[in-house]
Length: 139
Image 1 (cartoon, rainbow, N blue to C red):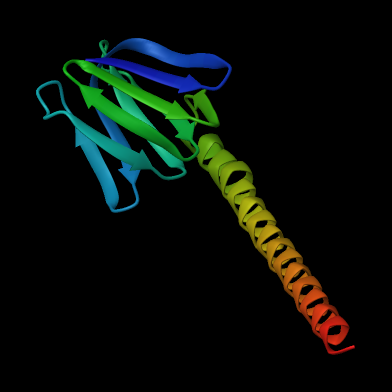
Image 2 (cartoon, rainbow, N blue to C red):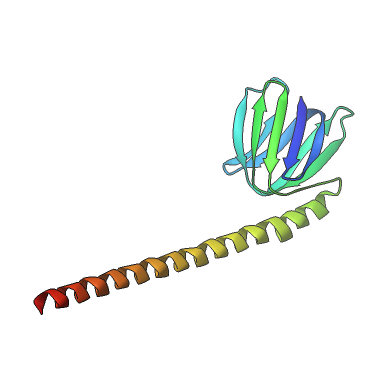
């Protein structure tokens, strides 16, 4: 199989591999060369693979999409780090990717409050306009 890992600005991995282990929302899974084609939504975690020399390597992956088609496995992710030190990569996932996800959730929450306030303001303006129009008609 050929593994390709793409970030927005670069290709992080592009090499033949014997096995890939990744993690989706419903758990970890393993891909071997004759595995059925599939698509999976990846969660922040460590992806591991065996290269053709049987050396295990690792990629810390932020959320992303994995597509296995024929003998190619392509992963598109917003953020990833390739490395051989599993402990350091695990710390990267914990510190960087999960913290980033928490900040994104906080930003979405703030945006939701802003949208609600804007809609409330429109509703109040509409109510005031209707009230003003009704007082003009009664004169």
